[in-house]
Length: 63
Image (cartoon, rainbow, N blue to C red; front, side):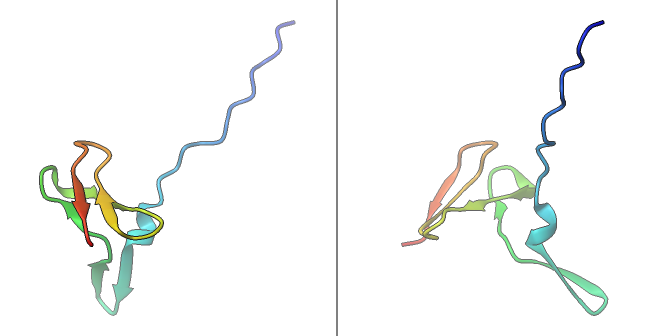
């Protein structure tokens, strides 16, 4: 009998953290990538001095 490989943990995105519901409207807390357009968020670095797009490699320095 062949042993089955254990499936690893799914690589889930945390896009739900980038939205806030206020009443009947939804507000986005993160910025979109200017090159890729709506739907692609920029990731913030830990010390919040830059934002980065993982798709097109656009970098926005905030300081």
